Image (tube, rainbow, N blue to C red; front, side, top):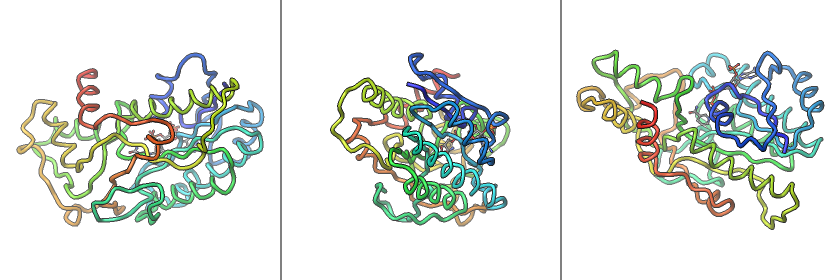
Length: 293
Ligand SMILES: NC(=O)c1ccc[n+]([C@@H]2O[C@H](COP(=O)([O-])OP(=O)(O)OC[C@H]3O[C@@H](n4cnc5c(N)ncnc54)[C@H](OP(=O)(O)O)[C@@H]3O)[C@@H](O)[C@H]2O)c1
């Protein structure tokens, strides 16, 4: 099975390249080969390679930066996936795209499922929501995975940022009223690989009697606040969390972009359809930290 990967230099893309079995043929152009702001370059590349599957890990992921550069955010998060999904549809390949908990926006404590209302609160969420909509319009065979609070050893993410600050600052303020699931990029990629293996079996002639195309939530199990996650990181690093991490309410913590309070994802659909269930977030974090320090 030939797989074309956009965004392979990002945190999710890097973990994917580390984890993908050798039996899959991977084509992973970098930005200097295919700039996703250029329609022509995207089309030429896809039509030349004619992959069976296209994975789009590329995005404009700077949530505050999206408020300042909305045009670029929409270009990468809405227009590029729209172009890629149209191309995928033309050559009958399967399109995988990654979306976010930030397409939702509620302040209650209910778990959000794939039918829950889409009501993004910031430009990043709006650009990702429009990306989803255009993919659904353009493409028959698509899988959109909505995840949350992604971390790994790669690039800037909450874990890499907070662990640096814990070492350099006396104390750090972290919001305690935004609730969600920290998701280890490796766990997410394990889930995605389960679906790729199934698609490979279909390609090899196995019959699958399930309707699999559509949108799925996929995050680690269990929830916490950013404050809870920061305390967990501090404890693992050998610090006293009550000295290092100061809980603050979102209204007292100013950021350029607003963030939703509720990011609890209901992952039951992906369990039902594909049998995928990611581990409890704290267990994954313990394993990740123990293996990387
Ligand atoms: N991070 C999170 O907490 C989070 C949470 C929920 C969902 N997601 C979603 O998960 C997916 C993966 O996120 P991530 O954290 O792995 O992202 P990331 O680390 O920020 O990586 C973004 C990737 O997109 C590429 N890219 C950006 N603009 C491009 C352009 N004009 N042309 C070509 N490539 C371009 C980057 O290439 P360069 O190396 O050249 O910059 C990089 O490979 C995204 O769809 C994101 O929206 C992330």
